[in-house]
Length: 267
Image (cartoon, rainbow, N blue to C red; front, side, top):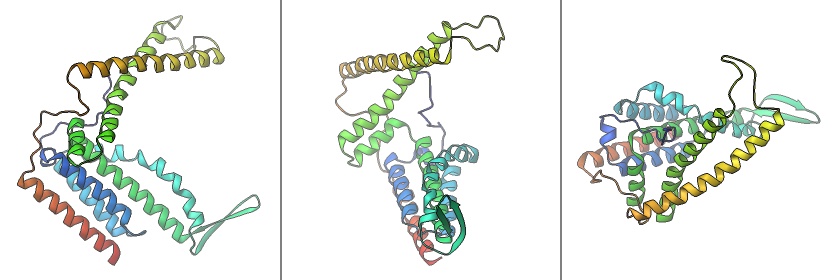
């Protein structure tokens, strides 16, 4: 495997890294659930939730830039909820005419939209801390221990494994295309390889080849796994035993989330 784009695990020696993966998975899900349950406009509670995640990030020694840069990927998807600023009833702040339609922006709509953005952003940061501090086999093992349906765990594990297969096949095709499309002279800015239609035809052919080659290779990988004893679950070299510190950290995280819910409703 030549790409590590899909593997965001960061090897560190920290309290968070040493936690049992079951604790990290459950706490992450509870953080996301807590964000969903917080009322719209609970800015103090949102800020405190973010502070808690930053605290866990600091304990994991990941660095603030690592967390913030990757978390912004959620914002473009959260923009899909922009329609709520026009549909939620409230005091009119601004009217926008579009043809024969008048769109009215309400204060309640803006508050809900901003809350959705914060929920998405904070939840993604919690997931980033989880994936950056837990190897993927340990995550799969934790899901199995938490009684997640075996078929779902198998689908997730195979999807993760075959993403690397797909990326490897894509690299091979791109390398073959570059080898057959040499520029006429060094440093030339001239685009080679034919017209736009020709390029589109070649790209379509590459996509078809990618599908066939990936399918064939995935079949070989699966049979190789069966030959090596695969029986529907992944194994890990790490022993998963709940220690006192795991229970303690899980209890502290649960207490903090309960306090955040109280703050969100009283604030």
